[in-house]
Image (tube, rainbow, N blue to C red; front, side):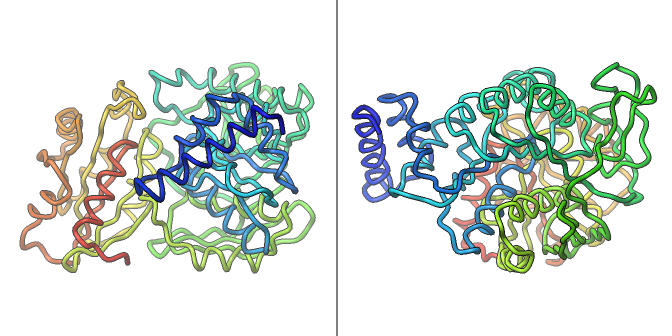
Amino acid sequence: MSFRSSVAVGLGRATTWALRSVLHRSASQMPGRVAMAIDPTVISDLAGKVGEGSVVVCGTNGKTTTNNIIANAIERSGRTVLCNRAGANMAPGVAAALLPGSRADVAVIEADELSTPAILSQLHPRYLVLLNLFRDQLDRAGEIDRVQDTIVKALASSPETKLLVCGDDPLSMGVAVRAKAQGTEVLSFGIGEDLHLPPDRVPEARFCQVCGAELEYDYRAYAQLGAFRCPNGDFARPKLDFVATGVVVDPSGVSFEVSFSDGTGGHVSAGFGGVYMVYNLLAAASVSHLFGVSPEQFQEVLNDYHPENGRLQHFSIGGREVILNLAKNPTGFNQNISLLQTDTRDKAVMFVINDDFNDGKDISWIWDVDFERFADDPSLIAFAGGHRANDVQVRMKYAGIKAPVVSSVTEALGRLGDTPLNRPLYVLCNYSALWPAKAELEKMGARHV
């Protein structure tokens, strides 16, 4: 490590200490910013202390949960892990995650898709996991082809990195085809059976990534994910290396059998999530297997895993269940709607949409959310919140749903009044709305359930 890098690491660690011990604040990004201001290549130097290499997890939806489960699983196998668990997924957050300690066995890193070139070119991970690609933050990220170009460029900068990709997603496979052509080794995961679910009304991808013809499907799991093929024969779902079968998704959670590429397998079950979580857990199980974690150890991690980062986090307030989750784009909202509809109880739902920088100012995507699926539920009580509450309210009006504006979760709970306590409140928030809602719930003295 050079003198410059040593100074960067020392000041970064000092910043971590000051933030946590003196100011009692999060140290997920600022220490990395300090270190990178002194040495912009500090990630490269820090990567050298990771003995068994690293894995980077990216994709539009599900990064944080998948990343943290992988980290927990590798730790369960007895190894030391560095991880950006809070979801600080740009280069400063990665640098901050790598600062602690003199050595570690594995680094498990969540990465923002547009930050992958800066991260992969320095970290050179063993694996890049690509979970999915959907339209998201259009005013920052642009259209999908820009995101695809960025990930392909990142893989070109780290030729030793293997790509573990969702083979069911044609947009992710568009990246895989191009990456493979430039020499990247590709592994794929997916669901190996028809779940007999209704397709989403507005799929993200309809056309072949090679010739532009409209894709055909044997079946879809959700959005554009499924067993796809081009009628011209130049693009199709690959033969999967890691496969989920016997999939069960119900209000109690998800379960499936996983088959690994070496002929082994195991059972996976978790008390949370929907169909999208099957893909997240399959990706996590696949990476864990590649790092030598046994199926039994992986299942032990899921048995002990209780979301505490606002993703499917459950609270009890005055005897009423409140479920908090992130929903930041059309696909995320549609999957949350599917999850809500598996809950047969009368329920209330609060949609909270902000338009801060990390959300994206353009919220026109709410018109691609299939809120109409709620219109046939006369028992539903809906609320609109956030900086763009009035826009949400108008969108809900066109879906045939009355959604009065509320300023907080507390107000939404108050408006439920004397309704039976067995009516849960779902609070669906985009990025900048999630943490204030979580803090508000915790301030109420909410009990985790």
